[in-house]
Length: 292
Image (cartoon, rainbow, N blue to C red; front, side):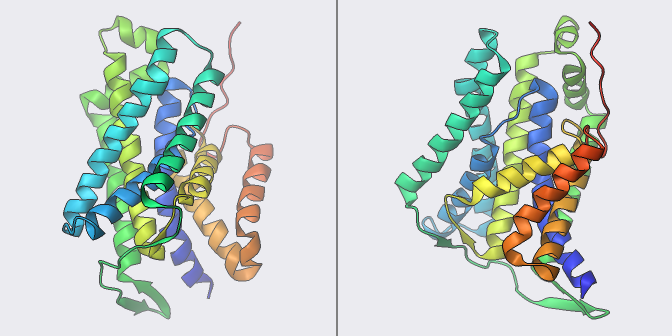
């Protein structure tokens, strides 16, 4: 039933949207694609699992610790691999290559510490479900979608209404002008990395619970799809990242259900390419002309 697949797609797409927001936030501030973001997503899922199984902590405590530590990891990535390059006015491509190196390092570090085999993620939420007009919706799906919706609304409110949100928007528009107006650019960048990485941790943990397995490679494809979602919606535009994430999730699920599950990734990326040929700036992005 197509409505059932739409529900499944929106659940998966909401996790892509959360991860895509991290890409868009960093790109909006630094005009940089942070390719280590997928590995941060993976680390967040592993931290929650380790706190749950090895340290025997409560799920909510484990989840909160994972979010905080992953957010701090995002700040560390910026301070170690990107800030020194910004100080030297290095080319953007240098910073991009640096994030790829960080991604490979994190993936191999996790394999070294916890092994490369697939880990079972405990089901900590009641696996029950409700049926509405023939559509089966599990409690976990409702929690994932509701949590993602609340986080997205809260993040959008913060960016639009708070002081730090206005500072982030000012920095995204013109970093030099914002600096001259007294805005601490480095603090804004630090908060941006913290929020983006924390959201990736939430998404990684949610997906771990949804599929009940994780491995050191989950960040690779999830990162690519989240990046595709950010580009599809209009990279640097937060509502665009959300729309793009939901669309990628729905397209992927419908392709798996009605065409072939082996082609789900190929079809999702093919739709992305087709959309960008029609509208290069993305669904909600605007084409910006550079004055010479």
